[in-house]
Image (cartoon, rainbow, N blue to C red; front, side, top):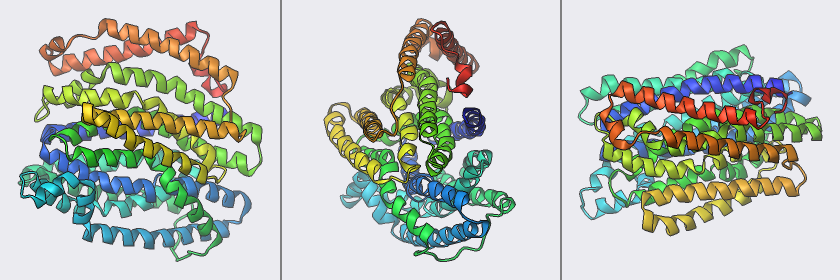
Amino acid sequence: MNKKLVKSGVIVSAMTLVSRVMGLVRDVVIANLMGAGSGADVFILANKIPNFLRRLFAEGAFAQAFVPVFTEYQQKNTDAEVQELIAKVTGTLGVLVTIVTVVGVIGSPLLMALFGNGWFVAWLNGEPDGEKFELASLLLKITFPYLWFITFTAMAGSILNTRGRFAVSAFTPVFLNITIIGAALFLAPELDKPELALALGVFFGGVIQFLFQLPFLFREKALVKPSWGWHHPGVVKIRTLMIPAIFGVSVSQINLLFDTFIASYLMTGSISWLYYSDRLLEFPLGLFGIAIATVILPALSKKHVNDEGDGFRKTMDWGVKAILLLGMPAMCGLILLSKPMLMVLFMRGAFTIDDVDMASYSLMAYGSGLLSFMLIKVLAPGYYSRQDTKTPVRYGIIAMVSNMVFNVIFAIPFGYVGLAIATSLSALLNAALLYRGLHKAQVYQVSKQTGLFFGKAVISCMVMSMVLMQFIPNQNSWLQQMFTERALTLLALIGAGVGSYLVSMIVLGIRPWKIKTGL
């Protein structure tokens, strides 16, 4: 079982690596084009709203509800019944998402007044920042239809993942990044407002992602004619699971949007600094956390359907150990190398050293929560695979309310950095509650071996941190270097960090390459 999971995890991680690298290239191009100015703030918010809803209708709540039910159908039903389920889900979801998309396009000023309230208030009072509200409302009309295309792209990915075809859906986001990069390089110079070009890149990126999945669905005999099926038993089960899962899966996204709401009242650049920090956080989170979660959800669902309690616990333990092995050094590296990474990736064009300084503070705050974000991705499937979506919702509500309280506590003295601190603290609380729930239900408990593994990983991370702190140049030294020299120095530091971490683990008796046998 573990060897198969590792193979699937490696495939997803490899494809995700390509996607994340292209995502970083995209962000480098955007930073070079617009820096952290008002135009960047406006585009980032206009792009964030449909991406937030994507988590609700697509990759997040829908996938968590659809995969267990679809897995059950494949295990217990005929091929014709499986195809009927796909048709009913596609048709029902299609109608709902189409309505939401139309309403979103028409009501974009209302949505922007809600999420960019600071700009809306400035617009009402005739202040200069009011122009941001007008431009953001226009851009949202262009980016919002992305939700429609990405919803069906995500559904196709869920079907392919359940059938073991992980590479296709993991590679698909590359096309979005390529389209946005192309729009920035070739379309933006032709327009007065480069933000419009980026918004068009998002729209066409969604179209291409959707079309790319269709041949693979056809090959799997899963490309069927959609039909309305609100009362179909499978659809009823999925929507029953999905409604609470919407809240449970999207807590971190709701927190980020709430951060953006507050940031719209803060100084220009706050939204952009938080965005660039979050993008660097998403790199290891997607590469490791989401990749591991993607492959264990179908496996856990099958274990639950086949009533394999011990296999279920072992699969959960494998996921937690894998997260500890990869997430802990990634967290330390993200915090210690925040400035060097921002300088190498973004410091050019309109993105200045001042932007590097400001973004590094929020990156360190976000980075402190990386392990919690990753653990949530692995612990939550322990509920969803058993078709329990209500429990994570309760924990999600607690975490979201706590985030709001933390925002009040930390945003006043620390500004936008306080928002990042609050998000990380609420993620820690959410992960703790998820584990506590699994433990109380006697579904999963961290084994003594995993506890020992955690202790050794902590020691190894301390060694890694000391090595990095010894060799990281000061800021003046970085500024005196050319780009190539900076990049090589950063790569050398990353190599030193990874090497010292692995050596420490080996000295302590851990063989990371034996993850395929359960670590």
